[in-house]
Length: 156
Image 1: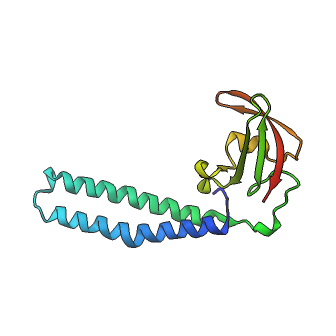
Image 2 (image 1 turned 90 degrees about the vertical axis):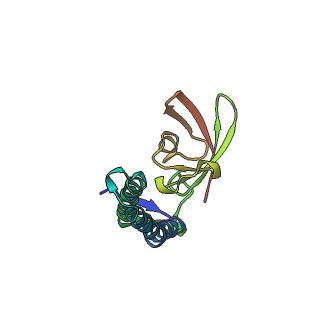
Image 3 (image 1 turned 90 degrees about the horizontal axis):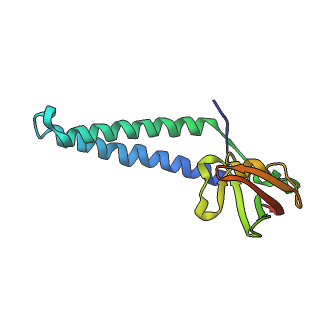
């Protein structure tokens, strides 16, 4: 099983999500199934089928979340260096062609949130930046072609 690196905050959110699924969503779906079952003939009961399908999907998500939690290795944020780009760094880059500057924080896949500037460490851009230093040029192959970025700043 692959190791998933995560911050303390990301791990806490993941555990909260699991607790919510188990203590709120699971009983709610069980209640829906019981209600649909009480309505009689299950062979033509769309509510029952929908509730059973929702139950299956929820149980799969619970199992997936438990497996993810089991694979987590917490990142000690105090030991993060800004010498080279690595996971948990905030990186400011400039697109060499367009001169547009962007700042991203490299995070684990489960913590990625593009709206908040957090990109998964396994994305092409993050992969192309890993190990680079301030001033380095990164040639990154993305789905739309080749992009060139200059690393302007690395922080925590």
